[in-house]
Length: 335
Ligand SMILES: NC(=O)c1ccc[n+]([C@@H]2O[C@H](COP(=O)([O-])OP(=O)(O)OC[C@H]3O[C@@H](n4cnc5c(N)ncnc54)[C@H](OP(=O)(O)O)[C@@H]3O)[C@@H](O)[C@H]2O)c1
Image (cartoon, rainbow, N blue to C red; front, side):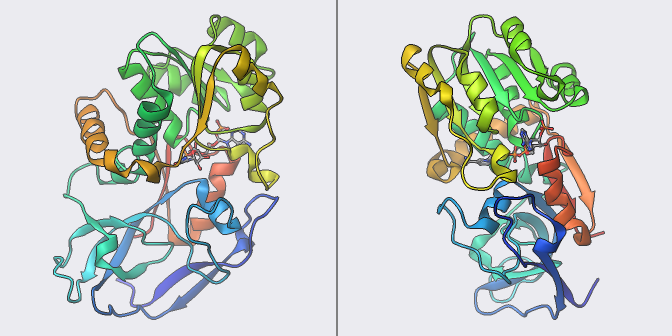
């Protein structure tokens, strides 16, 4: 085991442009011993979310601001190598805000102990914030009914692939929008979606006419911008539009381009609502139980894309904005 700690820190803010490797600096130093109530965790696995870029930019205001020189934030799974006075067990597997580093010294209260099950990584994906976002957002905001047509943008990504599967479990007709034929094939042939549209293959007009002839009842949007605008033009009566993310803003900065088709909300008596997962904490236990049950009985599949090596952390984040990942983007830090 290493006896020093490598940490990726924020060196620049990627505002109005793509994330690049020079936005981060790799520093190496001693492992900080635990203070009262703290533990030291050896980081094994990190999860990546497009929101990390927004946090580097300090937009949104729903998380504490970052500073240049901060260790890059990120959820992770690891094992306790120094429990300090916390009462947690040496070697226990934990999940929490470990950050991009080999060893995290942090308050024990920020960690949750995980059972050593065979699907540990799922706690960063379908059983973690990804799955919770899909479950809570769909139940509380999308409110799908059996028979509804559910259309998802960013459908082959972490959240989108879970939203679609939950939609199928709930009896919806599910259409996913994703970049490239491989991702579309995965959605229909492996995850059971009823249809998929490759938005990189050209205008979506014909495919939408064919696959969504009666309009969209629930629109789950991870992308925003012109893609959202196109889809707003195809809403069914009383549609619910769930604004989960806006990854298309990643290259331009600021907020996603506003939709010129928003007035269709009036003609269709539709609602459009943004949400932040943190507001639904009271639902987490019930949501996790449901997701765990579906995962165990095979109705929910966990899709993960696992890279390796802490030195590759910036490149791993960049994969999200290049469309290189399928499902949840993870990075194995340890051996
Ligand atoms: N509201 C909340 O509480 C909450 C919670 C969690 C996540 N989120 C948000 O939900 C969204 C999805 O998160 P995730 O973790 O599931 O990420 P993800 O879908 O795995 O993100 C990466 C995918 O986004 C697509 N993408 C990238 N740039 C794009 C562009 N310019 N236009 C269209 N698609 C693009 C790519 O897929 P293609 O190859 O298909 O283009 C890429 O593989 C993110 O915006 C995230 O920040 C919100």
